[in-house]
Length: 482
Length: 102
Image 1 (cartoon, chains in turn purple, yellow):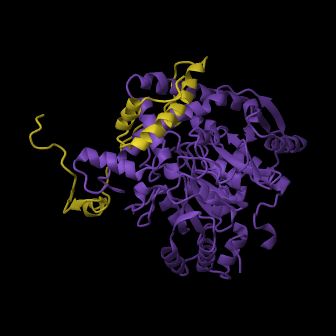
Image 2 (cartoon, helix red, strand yellow; image 1 turned 120 degrees about the horizontal axis):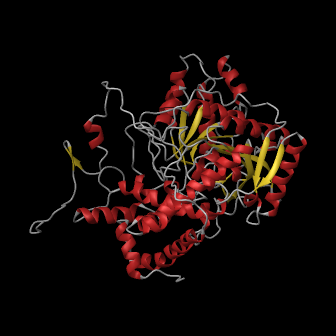
Image 3 (cartoon, helix red, strand yellow; image 1 turned 180 degrees about the vertical axis):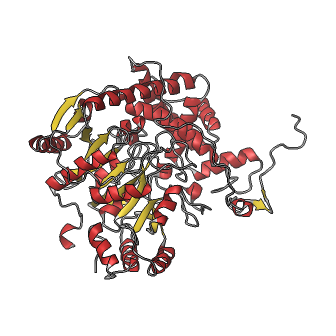
C-alpha cells in the first residue's frame, strides 16, 4: 500500500486512528529510495529510522508531524549520522551533536530517513559538484534536479517522503524546487537557527522547507523557526502560524513584477507561463504592476564577491587536524594543510576559496568587498521601497528549465548565472518561495518565485496556495501510475 | 582584459587559500580563475550607490547568556573526532623544526 504520495491530513488521520504505524511509512520510504535510480541520498538512515519508528508506537500521536519521515540535506549536522556536505573532505565525518533544527524535528517525533545529496559544500547549481555523483530529476532522469539542494528536491518530487530540509545561500532551495516542480521556501534571514548548518556564506545561508505542496511547507516551517542562543543572527519573533492565510482570497493584493526578472535573460516559454499566471491573478482581483528595482542586475557580481569571500574564511576550518579528511604522512603542519585541502576539495570549491581569499586580501578588500557591501545595502533599500507600495514581488525562479546532466561543466560562470534571478533575495535577507506554475514543451516544470518583505512568510504562503489551487497542476511525475 | 592569470598569480592565490596545486591544475586555474575575476570587475561599472554598507541582513545585540550549569560535550568525544589523537591530545605534525630560530 502506498501512503507517502498522499497529503499530510490523510496520513495524520491514518496514524491517529492506528490504521497505519510510523514503521509502515519508514518501510515504504526505504523501499522506494533503495529501488530508485535518483541518487537523491548520500546516506540512508535505515536502521535508526526503523528503531525510532518502533519506539514511537508506544507514544501518543500528539502533533501533525508525528511519525513522518523527513530527508535532511547533508550539510545539516546530525549526531551519530554521517554528514558529508557532498565532499570527500567530510566523507568520514560523524558529528557529535545535532544542529538546532535537527533537535526541533526530533522534538516533533519526525524520523530522519537519510541525508540528501548536494553540490559540494552547497557550491553549485546542479548538484553535479557532489563527490557522490549528481542526483537525477524524477520528471526526466537525463536532467539535473538543480542545486545545491538537488537531492532534497529530487526525493520530494518523487514522492519518497513528504518533508525535506534544504539550505539556500544563492537560490539553492528555490532553484531546484523550480526544476523539479515542488514548493521550496527560503525563509527570512534569521528565521531559523543556523547552528549546525555547515557554513558556506554566513550572511546569506538559510535553512528552509521543501515539500510537494504549500500547506505542508508552512506546517514544516511552523516547527523549525525560532530564536536560538547559539546563533546570534537568529531573530526573536512572536510565535505565529504560517498556515493562517492559506485559503484566503487575494482580491486587492498589490503585486510587483520587477522588469529585470522578465527581461531577455529568461526563456520565452517561461515568460509566457509567468504572464499567464499574472493574467489569472489580475482576473481574480490582484493588482499586478511592472516596476523597476535597481541593482538586481548586479546580484551575481555581489554574490561572487560576498559568497566567495565568506566561503574562503568559513572553509579555512578544514585543516586535517580536528575532523574530516587528513592526508597521509605529512612532513610538517604546512604540508598537512596544503595536501589535505588539495585531496579533500573538488574543483568548484577550490576555485571559490581561491578567488574568495584573493578578493579579501590586502587592498582588494577595499576595492571589491567593501564596494559589494555598499551596493548590497542599496539593493536592500530598493526592496524596502518596493514593499512600501506592494505586498509581494513575483517573477520567474529560473531563466531556463532543467538541463541535461551531461551538459558541459567547463564554464566556471555557469553555476552563478543559473541563480541570477534568485540571488537578490539572499542579498537582502528576504523570504522567497518557488511555486510550480506550468511546464515547458518537454513537460519539465516551470516555477514562479514569490518574494515577501522580511518576516512576511505567511503572506507568501497565501498567494502561493491561491495559485496552487487555481492552477491545479498534476505535479506528481509518476502521475498516472499512482 | 587578459584571459589568463600568470603562473605566479595562481600560486599566490593557492597559497592564500592553503591549497596545493599540481602543474596540470595550475594551467587549468590560470584560465578559470581569470574568467571569474574578469566577471567580478563588473562591480566597477555599478554607479549611484551610497557609502552605507550591509554586512548581514539581520543581527541582534550581543547579550550575555544566563549563568547556569549545563552539560557540555565531553573532551574524550571531541578528541576522538580528530583524525590523529592520543589520550586527551590532538596530534599534529612538527610546527617548528629544530634549528629554526624565531
